[in-house]
Length: 558
Image (cartoon, rainbow, N blue to C red; front, side, top):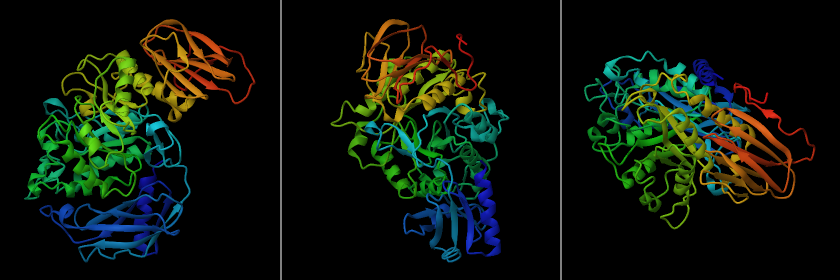
């Protein structure tokens, strides 16, 4: 699905021919349009000083989207646009404070063709309490993420190159995960020559105080490769705009070299990446504990600024430290975040579930927060946090049962491992195949987006159990230990009952004709899911039929 490259070529060909139609391509794919602007040297500040946006209007009159452009070096300016409906989209307005850009291509159009691309991620208003995300096409995919904080630089501890290939790393992650979180800078492990910003003399620098002067070479050759490849594989690219760790990379929102105004940086990121349906934005990692430290009010102000430049429903939030999980001061500030990012390292199903649910319930506030919640530092496998493979598997099973999502990483020591420098290897991060099995099992069998935490139909369960319910239609019970005689009091009808062992990566059907009082045992496993689905028909087949996901090992019963 290499749509981005194809559309860029189409746009360039149309431009050279001087045609009215500048491009055509699928709905929910990115079209890049090139514009010829003033020739600028590295010592300039175009991200701050040049205002440039294009208004795209659908032939039906709506939507009407204002998309900002960005400087890409020399006299090259780009606008990236993603059509959300089939049909003709006209460049109805091309506005700039520079005469070379103002009005250029105005009146041209592009043609969007029907497609099956899933599109953008949005909180689903139809899901109970808006706990879950939905795509533009109405589909739902469960999210488990991975972390490669500074992998764009290609360096690790000791100043050693990792030898990683950004596109290969993205593609490898997409085999196992649905999201990859990474910073747009080198952070703790910077590249010795190539840098994300330019200082006042036009020299490359890691100092984020110069965030109003992004270096187009860095973003074109590194960040663009990651985001574009992730789009091709439908992997969420979760972009961290400040941080995670060292002052240079955290200073992008301090913006000291621009009088403390981070608006150029926020506008640049929105212009360069917000048209990608797979992009999420994290303003700052651990905004409240590292230098520079920011307040909730400051984080909310940054969120409100970037929202002005986001033409699409790009997921946006900020990452706090572990205490508090989500600062209640945000509840009294103007809306800007569409989801909660939390941080709590957890090993157990019930704790992982309860932590997710507690943020949604907002026990200290007057009303539930009703936004999706993702624990983005749920369990880093490895010696760094002393989380074993089974700890990571159990924690992510619990996050699902709490009505939210989780993110992992591979951490061999403090600031060491894939979670900083990338070069993902599932043989090392050995929980990855189990997390893939968990995610694919949920997607294949469970209408999770209709569910909310609830144990109402179950009795004789133990303290390790947590559950989800779509009342009268579908239920999930999860546990982390052996237990006998669990009871499900099923509503009227016939029910299919499946057991999924996430550690063993085995699935089995316990019954296809269950009804009334159903008694079952939980065998010893740290991550079990029992799934009850009401049958739409009454045609039974033999109970005990094994189920198996593609790529999973055979059940012992096969």
